[in-house]
Length: 99
Length: 511
Ligand SMILES: [Zn+2]
Image (cartoon, each protein chain N blue to C red):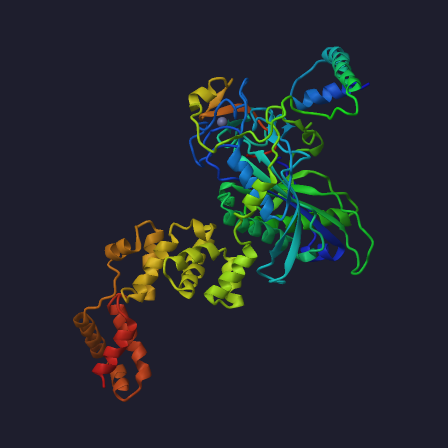
């Protein structure tokens, strides 16, 4: 049975830039374990003759023509941004990488 | 960052005496489709920030991506041009990461099912030692993904506290990108940096020939990451397999020259660490064009945890073999064959052709010849004056503000006798300076050769009168002295005369 450790939850929280308190980590780790266990139980049902699948419908090659469609104005695009400056989304400094 | 210490470097020669470099090159190329990879937003370069977005490329809830068919077609053609297998069935995958340059918190990419894989290509070294030598580069894969947004950093760098933040423009987010990954290139030794450069130049030509990208490195539509590691040098003929050393990944090297310089720098830097008994840190490094060095970037362990999984919102891509063959039939002649054919057609010597290739002048010469100029004349213009200008400005020949058609027109004026070489150069100056077409520049600057025999005759008379000694020599049969008088006349006519005709007139008058 997969089990997700407290450390793993802390690591995931760091990746997702979410701050979790010790109490929250204690609380979430067992909960996430239960969820993973529930999902893993599906694997028991799946017999060898059932191929793993990632899509619910058996479609392939759904393509769009390379034709432009109107999108959002800059005002619309930025309307949901907590902060904007110079017609750009203002975000906390990105570590290191330029561009 | 204020305390950036300079790296210790071992000389390139010494580094190569002790170590063998292995390189892996990852090239990202932006396709020139009209719309983005998964939505209908425009991909045009240079638009005002955040004017080319929609709910899909902003990752807003409820939006659904749909694959751009043209981008898949381009990806397959690139794969075929690189002698790759084309997947019968492949999926997109989410590459999860949490930098704000992707508003979705993931980049839609391909993971273990790239559309193209197991290819190869051959690159030819052009200048320096080993010119003409051919290296085979194995292609591991070419996969489809999307570009990220562009961030601009604001605030005082080096401060730990304070108002440091970034501003993001998502116009570029979602532009179709093909990532082409080589297998480790080993055995190139001291030529490794030159091979890296030649490979990227070769890819650029190949992609240009396919017509799938603008491949403008200075605009970022072609970018290269250089992975490099060193292993202790094995003696020639040894069959022992030496494992590859720890590699670094130098990101976003954005010119051909920088690809070569960055590889050289990393060889010297890593060698200096290894000879001191240290170990190379596996990390991302950033190339600094201005100082010519690399510096440590973000730490790998954290950022590499991408938790890929198949993209549920996009159905798999399964190119039929018939479609693949149809696309194979559209491939242009490969660059090497193309070069060989043109060289024969143009009658260029090997050395001439080598210079043409090294200057990236094939497309412009081709177009100039197509506009009616002889190959030698086209070569002369592009490789002398124009190559010098491109060099000075650090741009490609094709980016100069003069078209092959305009160059052809200047040469046509020379052939008609309306311009001599010196005047033609001034016309080229004018066109490059934005003064208009060659004919407009000739008119505006008054550059045409004076064919008015009366005016020319007067100038010759003035020159003879002012230089009696020279005139006497010519009268005595020392025709070689005419050169001095031709110079005087040309100066008098402000260069706007046909030197051959001036010579004829001088001899006529003095015999
Ligand atoms: Zn969009």
